[in-house]
Length: 304
Image (cartoon, rainbow, N blue to C red; front, side):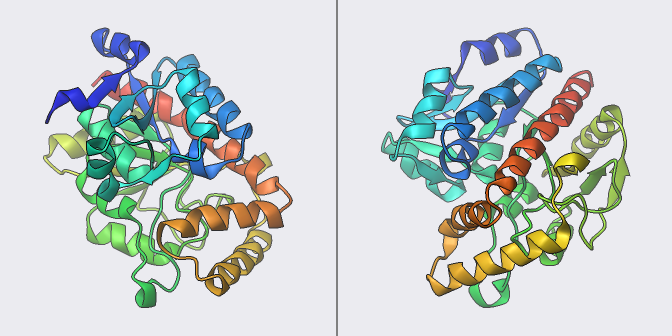
């Protein structure tokens, strides 16, 4: 791998030099997931949470064809405000880098870049998965295949509730990706603490999560681990309420012919509109909560 494609922030370089725990963060949440200025505020607050827990944040993006591992405040502002930011998944990385373009990394692309940079833990909101009606559309997020082959632990609030969660879990099971509940036996569904599906295993402490992750990789079992961490109780949304909202948003997406990588940003924006902003509040809360848990797991994993 050509190392000139990777560019580290001074903070991340210092962390690598001193063998400190590092936590990867995605950038689509900045460019495509939240409105300004909440996107910038959340990105910075999440980074601060990671620092307070003894780890170093590495927000990842493609800027001028470079894979940036750790961003400056100016780079975060640029991602938040610019209209010239592609949504970058595995498929898009070679084009964006070769043509010196800008891209905000999805879960899949962030996992790839994190592994290239030697970062083992990645904090996000929720993973992508099998979309509803995928048996007709074949719309399956690249996040799932990345989890099958890229050895990065992903701390999230479960699968996004706009998905077919049952089929998402079936896919992960087929490819041997463990779905681990952090203090829960039930898979959280992003805005809600529960769903009708169970996780594979439950852990209650960062050390136990780290033990399992390290054991998996030392056994030579490549691929990621999903650490599903429920949204805090005070910020969770009522299940039937958010389900009705999502059904309305999905119908509107279908009527407007929205498909592929445009589906998720459209749905999240529509859900925010229909919930009068409360879904955005929930989204911010769950990302911060994941940063708390993810940074503690990273610190424990770094000891092993």
